[in-house]
Image 1 (cartoon, rainbow, N blue to C red):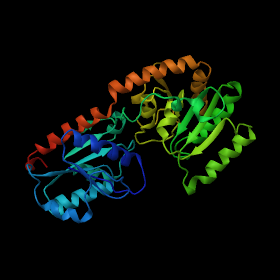
Image 2: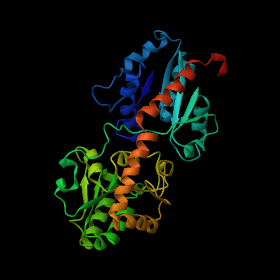
Image 3: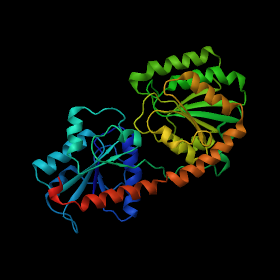
Image 4: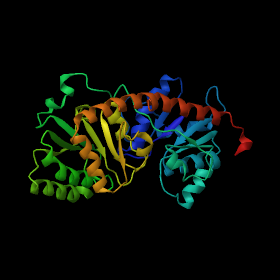
Length: 346
């Protein structure tokens, strides 16, 4: 099994590969990855090893090439159909839009297709299996030590609300900032934090948000922390997590927050609405609706007990429905089905 990663920058797809492969290895799958931007210690092969794909693997007639991007599908089709390597192709689609003609053609060439949500699957015109992403509940877990308490951050207030991820318009960072500017003056026990990278093309966007925060006099209670060494501890320090994206592929951060026993408010972008149990683990609002987002957050800032109760429910919900092991097992089932295919089925 090969899981290519043809993108150097860290992305949600890369994160999925990094988390899944060690678990799949523990489940007995012979799997490695290929490509740049991957951590040391992850089983991988070099580009020159692709020449060895003409040989059948030990104990199997074919290998599986599991693509998650268009360029990875292109490589798989070339190796299988042009170079005649003994490969079968699997593609995971997270896109929630109508695919372009070339992408549709590539998807039709796959031996199996996985959709990361029912919503993304609705855009596929081929048979597919819905397998939602899971979260590693050993890495993302509730507070265990005093360092996990918000008080250890040294920031003011008793409770924290956070928004994590890349700082840009698509992610709705501005919607979160606007909501906090409106709400924090009424709730002095709360502090808001934003973590994540700002790339050069979005620096003016971030700087404008900082100026608005300064104008509101909230520099001490609404902070950009930038990229933090370990975001997991910040999930544990939060009482409420907000995912205000206007557009999203899948979006893992609400699962990571819920696994940390944190209530969530999200937009309905990506697969967020399929993760949340409204009124029990969090609240879902229409993407881009700043007023609805603000009022959903207000309910938790006004009632920290509600936030704690929904955090407890969220933890149980994730552990039952979204453990990473469940995702890995479901993907293994797809692999076995693909291995069992006859060549005449393509």
